[in-house]
Length: 304
Image 1 (cartoon, rainbow, N blue to C red):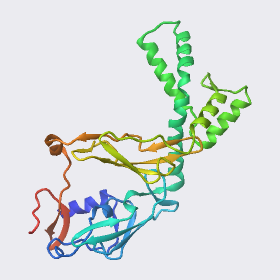
Image 2 (tube, rainbow, N blue to C red; image 1 turned 180 degrees about the vertical axis):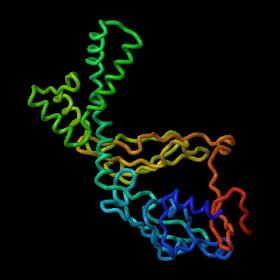
Image 3 (cartoon, one colour; image 1 turned 45 degrees about the horizontal axis):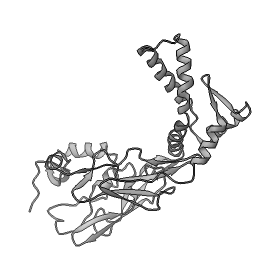
Image 4 (spheres, rainbow, N blue to C red; image 1 turned 45 degrees about the vertical axis):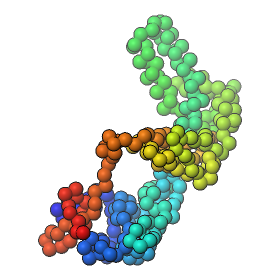
């Protein structure tokens, strides 16, 4: 079983220091300590002043050059957690468990591409008409499954050619202005004047307002850039398993998009739904080779 625990640590990329002491449910059952999970699920090195016990300050350190602790929306976050207790009930305070060590510049560029792709794709819907005309001309005006398949394929190829970074979009528009406000994408003419005008009208530094049926949306700064909105369902309802608990408004030079893309949905809690809900297994002590090891196990019995 000790090999299972070592495998668990490796699979979670945990990098706890050698002097870290795991809470012992027998020896430390009257000693307040915080959950271990946030320290095991990060790919950063974790250094704690008092392991996971009361008042411990844990610092997340990214060892690779150019890497930083970044959340899913691409923002740098404070790299510390503090174990705060009320009696024997303890929770971590801080943002560090929301982040991972990532190549900051590369990740920010990928976020920029993702946001701009969503913004630009909306203004390229007009390509549907010229694409259909081009395929119809190629097929002699015939309509068939084969023709529809070619239309979808060509649309996907055109979408791949859509500029994604801020600089690429600027160059795309400037090139069109030098050619009578038209830029060709795989022989499909794109009116850059209409494109730029549409982008300027759309961008106001805000994301679209969020609503949640059977629940509420609580935002740190309205629907402005950088605002984090948390989804909370009313009594008797719970978030759908595919729904994000929170979304952040991320903006580029050309527009704003909510990250994550998935929309939140509250669903009524039922007995069947509760049976399917994932149950967090308890931490228990396993003795192997005369040593105590902390593991998660469905069949493990913790002392009372």
